[in-house]
Image 1: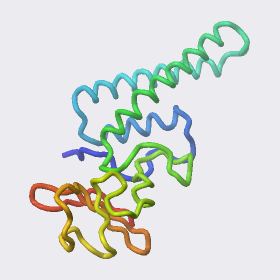
Image 2 (image 1 turned 90 degrees about the vertical axis):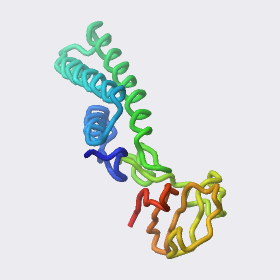
Image 3 (image 1 turned 180 degrees about the vertical axis):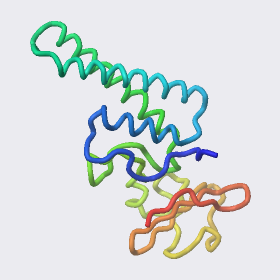
Length: 180
């Protein structure tokens, strides 16, 4: 059975070129359980990507980059590129673990992946990040503390920077993700 969220970590590294990142993102999305509508959207983006690659290959083969056909093709390529980015990234965002995003790694702009929101770690005031995430004392599990009922999540961060995010479930606390 496929997971319902994307995994934390790198999807594509070393480049942010659409012809490299979009196939990698489509592959990552193919590895999870998507709604039927989102699966159709991914199929459409794949068709768009195939068209984009064919158009890009044709433009690269052109011996006169100043002619009208080439310029029209370049505009078409740019449009397809924006359409893929504006469609696929938001779709992928809806399948990330809690308190995560799809985008460039904060320390490496050429590393596209799923990352925890940095502000979650920076804001150490209890419950102040968004009002729903409790900051656990070091080396504690959510069952070790009296966490207010309105807190849906609990974050444990140790002195080495390892972090675990828990979500309040029907039967207790469930681990969402961990960084070691």
